[in-house]
Length: 109
Image (cartoon, rainbow, N blue to C red; front, side):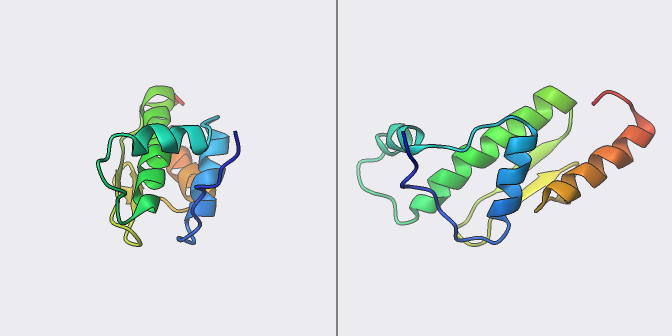
């Protein structure tokens, strides 16, 4: 199915999609969004938060399982952030730098 719910409110979203591709994580599609929206009695005010929740949770899961990296995120509309090893990550280059720094200490990735 397509992705009519694809949100592009944040500049760093393009970087997160690059990271998702690097990790072989699929971007949330319409089916994912519809499944998530069914849990709400009313349409939430910030649908993009649901999109970011699905995308960033999948990225964090992949970072934890594939590389043993500490990963988390914070979502609040335009104030949404991804963190890896305690550092904010907005681009694939940010992630690659963190992996390279960690690989200097540990070759598990």
